[in-house]
Length: 299
Image (cartoon, rainbow, N blue to C red):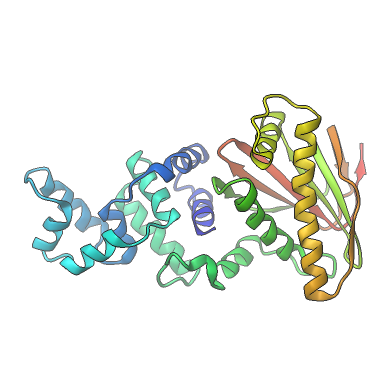
């Protein structure tokens, strides 16, 4: 998840555009992370030093690591450490942005250092998602207003993103959430959670994104909107809500029930209460997730 939140940081600070970020995200898994980006991330070299080494490499037949060692910027053991380290996703994303010319080394250096400082991350390792730091980043990013009706929102959305990674893919960027009271949708699947905690959940997107979401979840190549597409997206929502209900029951002793899912076309939600819109930009399109403590009027 660090890759996704780092991407959001770049987008929210207008360092890259949405189109540039999505393009880089698409090619990042096939991108080879180079020594320069690795050294900047580890704090072994600055962007200025990397650029200087690159300039020299254009005039001599030497590897960049050997030149950096000769210049005293880095040691041989540090070069070997970087080249043998496991490459994390956010580095591949950064490298893809640099390769495409959407960022230079100096911009990557400033962005990654500012992001680490903002989130109090001294060094990001391959295990970052296994420690409490990712939860801190998540809570700071969404910052739901605490109230009796929203006390489980963070847990719900945290589980949602884990399930997106598991069942849909990790090629997405979470965008800033917003509070809404009304919402119009071209295509919407909804479900209610009832019990000691009540919530109205919805997934909204265009027909094209709806089909892509269904295709990924069902591992099928759907090409048009039909009952199988509707059922697949509905089942993803039901899986998410079911796992959330089980977790809450096991951890809090709160019993919850799920109402059947419903599919709506060209509808408007009105009088939403404690409602948050959580947009997520995938490489195939944008999907809006909505969580509200009150079942809205549907027109």
